[in-house]
Length: 136
Image (tube, rainbow, N blue to C red; front, top):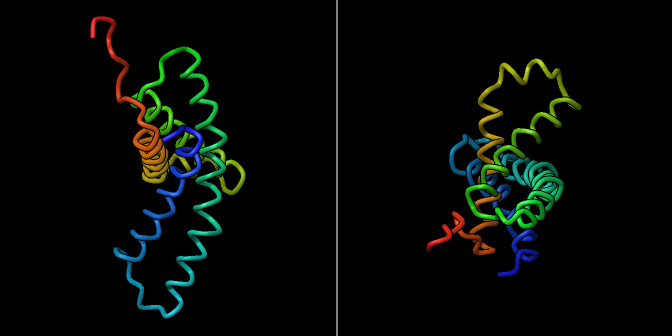
């Protein structure tokens, strides 16, 4: 699959996992739970997933390609770093930034989210997990 198609499809994994996780693992005895979860997914997670994938993912892809270091490991680590930077940016605009230091769990979740989207991109675009050595 071309990298451009993978870039359009990969960010969908995050809202899909969020929606599935909320529907399976949380108590949804509230009759409006499905509607609220759908709204959170479509109005919150989906746009941010695409926005930050394009803000961080596309430039990182170009930089790693330009310096001939494009492999899955480097791209996924960059995705995790992008997830951490994303939550920092969101917190700086919406909340007290010092409370982010107390919420290490949220930082870890955002790193895993960035890593997940970049892993899905690597799988779709068939980026190798590591760059072959010169003798291979």
